[in-house]
Image (cartoon, rainbow, N blue to C red):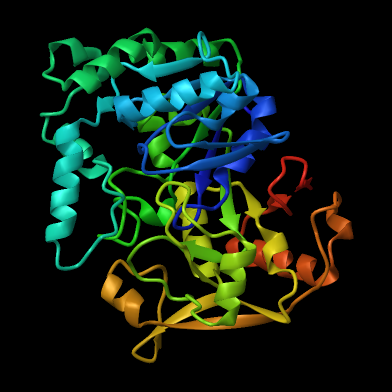
Length: 393
């Protein structure tokens, strides 16, 4: 693979990054998670086994060296339980899994503060209540706890037991990864959540507490931007969102129900039903620019099968004026009128199709429009949950 490749979600998370990272993992020696915590989830299918991961990079299921970078916040108890569950299923982690000694810890006090703050808000953000925000807040105000300093920190008995278990995995991952670069070993960096949950570029305040966009990959891993050779944007063929916040193309009708049921749109972490809507190409184009996306991976194209017609959002109007770019004001996003382009739908199952040319003509027209509007080529098309249900162009 390219020396260093970033995989980034281009929407509000849940784009299918786990499957694409799993597919690309064969070409990399190292898989690195660079931000977030156990507020995110990846679902990876390996043969007849389904793995639902929240912290451990999905490459561990393929025997790849996997890293939690310095930009990640780690709940030690949750991570210990996740690793033990992998061990019970025969996944080896010794010498394969590393935690940055610069990563900050999520402690019980952060979780309690998160839940208390959310319950007190008049306008709910929709936090998972897992202590992510308070842990990052402590990091920024310089009162946080780095993994390297856990022995000098007051912990609960459960947290101390977990850190005893995790201590052998702590490492200077910056040096490890730079040594890998020097040895021309491929490194794949995976983000959690998506671009529009990024604390700087997302639909603030309905965002997470870290930089999910590609810029966070370098700061969250200690790797240089000059080593990046490709940025793969993951774009679901329609749009979903968990929790509160603006959603210009949301569907609450039968089409939205079709997307929910056929797409199995339930959160890996929270179990909450995902809100569903038409694909928003204004968002996608903005994500392409922000992240420097060089290629797209389109996921869940198969879910659109059976719909008589499709729409994609190609513009926003606010107070009878066309907007340029993506608004920062969530009140404007709540009130905008999306402009749509319509497409004919298609029938039939796509899961057995292995060549792009064999996709229905209507599906290919839909995909071509995405390329033209966003300005980036489509390299991968996912037509099912299995690893081999991936079309490469």
